[in-house]
Length: 91
Image (cartoon, rainbow, N blue to C red; front, side, top):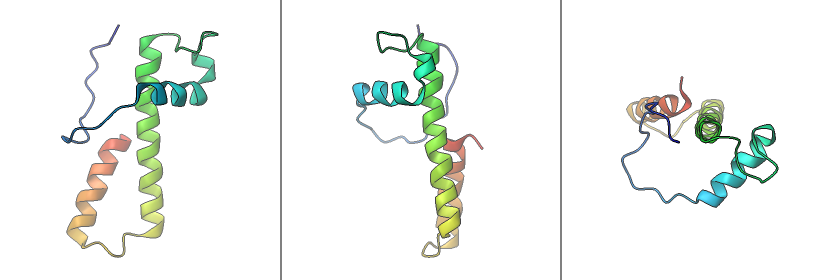
């Protein structure tokens, strides 16, 4: 059953979600939270795990961009981009 935890919206644009791909990603990342049937132990495990994977990806993107330096962006563009990615990363 879904929980009532609010999660920040990263984007207002429509995104196509591949649920099977998400399940496979969850199972690969959290084998201990996956039952012998291949499904998450609970909906909360799945929701938290997928949110964690999104934050982890955003953090890695932020690290890579910071390391490479967004040298070609105008400073105001970089500040806005960084703020968006930091919010997605949960920082």
